Image 1 (cartoon, one colour):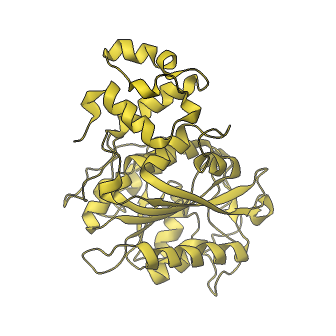
Image 2: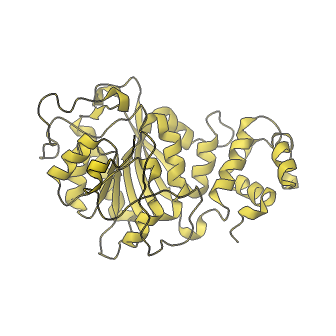
Image 3: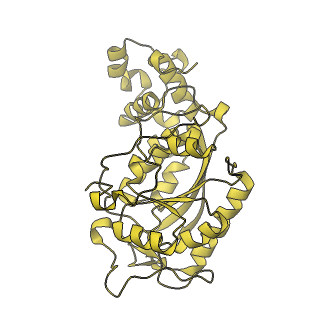
Length: 338
């Protein structure tokens, strides 16, 4: 399904979004406006939408007529309805923005919510940060958000297609993201954020508990893999608290967790192309227990390259994120940014 149906195109804010190929962005945001996307990848199953039926923080989320907004199985929608968890999420996010957020040309931090649903969290965040934007693919939710919060910039789009770098450039500062990520595309979504690390100050995201464990995993553990190696190379992730399925309607059969992902300062970001780093990391973990000189043999022959001598007899599961950057620079000279 196209992310911007013709009937809704005229309702989109003037700022269009389009994701470029994956690459770490270490330079400051550019003063340019991205190009509009003609289509987007469909939103897959497993999405836990941040909507609610009850009043939250003194504000009741907008409602459609009875039966008009049932959770869609095709979108995997489950609405966060526990007011205590909503309060906890919003309070912590607000604290993070005020502690770490940068201010743009308008003197305000730039906040972006991914997957706002009916706006249970959006209403409260928008009250504190009126210049925020939201990205939502469900046209029913988009209509509700625009009606209930006319000043909110709402983009009817798949979060995997967003040009976060261009969006940050338009506001003149790195953005602060709050999101609940669709379970079936969580890995792609997190890697998309990593690809735009230079445009994001931090992200406070809801994911499946098992994914959170993989993101914060340390070398040598069974959970350590591609997600940990890539994200920890450009950010400092931290798992905070868990949410039971009973906090949602309908209740999913999984436990969720909140992740705080603080992206590194621009000068600390990897000095290699993000797509090249991801390629090397993925190849390494395809045979995670093999010595690198064997697991990378195909790539070494293809690129006619070498890997650092001191790392040849190590395995992917024992490498630190910095080691993958070193291997990428040595094996793929074209990847270097310095």
